[in-house]
Length: 318
Ligand SMILES: NC(=O)c1ccc[n+]([C@@H]2O[C@H](COP(=O)([O-])OP(=O)(O)OC[C@H]3O[C@@H](n4cnc5c(N)ncnc54)[C@H](OP(=O)(O)O)[C@@H]3O)[C@@H](O)[C@H]2O)c1
Image 1 (cartoon, rainbow, N blue to C red):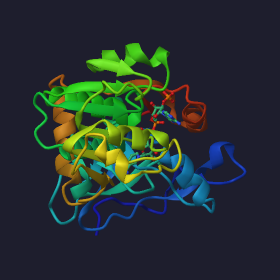
Image 2: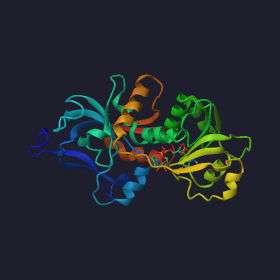
Image 3: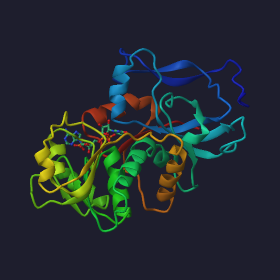
Image 4: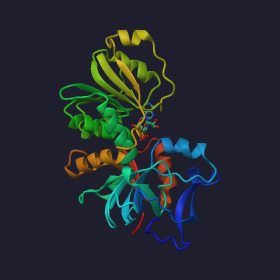
């Protein structure tokens, strides 16, 4: 049993609704969370949205409760005695239900925040930061190695660029257009390019690709022998690969079909690593848009129109 008393109260939170802006409706009558023994209850202070949630919301138009990236304050500790205490500030990686005033969170899916990390910075971390951190690990030791990041100024790409730089790699950022070049260099990338056509690029020990389409085959042609490509997204459409793409120079190279939430048991541990890197200045979430949470549909418009750089964060008042 949770120590949190629901007392039949209701709260605000988003539901999917095809008639609403961005397929969402801010409901006023959601039931208060009922926490399981290994869950805390968090009062949400900020959340972020992700590109893939555009698709998730369309796929589940029936009153489903979205929301994966959340930061807030623990208002009820876990009944089994594990996890953070009442009043601790936390960041959480959820599968759903995060865009509400109060939410239940399994202890293994959260990390306590250092004092210097703001709720807004923390909310930007879960999906995008964990994807970047775990995808960077696909390359093993990166000190002195060449790394290519596609979509380098996007939600995942900005973290991947900074983490690869922090690991000692020489990073080439692929950006969608020349105007994004200064942003990529500000993230620490050593070079920024708008295409992979130049055969002098690479060879790359590691490629992180969230775009797919024609870029994936081009990136494989720039891999070093035995290199790795972590393929985590296909915003640019389906990719077509030929064996000959590996024979350009990436002999015995590997493509990893990458998914970020696995393994689940160490999500909290990895969130703590990201929050620690933010606290000591090695990682700075690039937040291109901050709005009150009642403006969430506007934030989705910024993603869909590709005007957003970095992450969009929504805030809730105390
Ligand atoms: N496998 C996983 O576990 C996992 C986890 C997280 C995300 N993802 C996937 O990763 C992808 C990126 O997610 P995100 O949240 O980082 O998205 P995002 O914040 O919208 O960033 C996307 C980036 O890619 C660029 N881009 C978009 N479409 C492009 C195209 N057709 N050609 C070239 N560049 C393009 C954007 O450039 P502009 O600046 O010009 O818009 C932006 O820099 C999505 O497909 C998402 O579903 C997968």
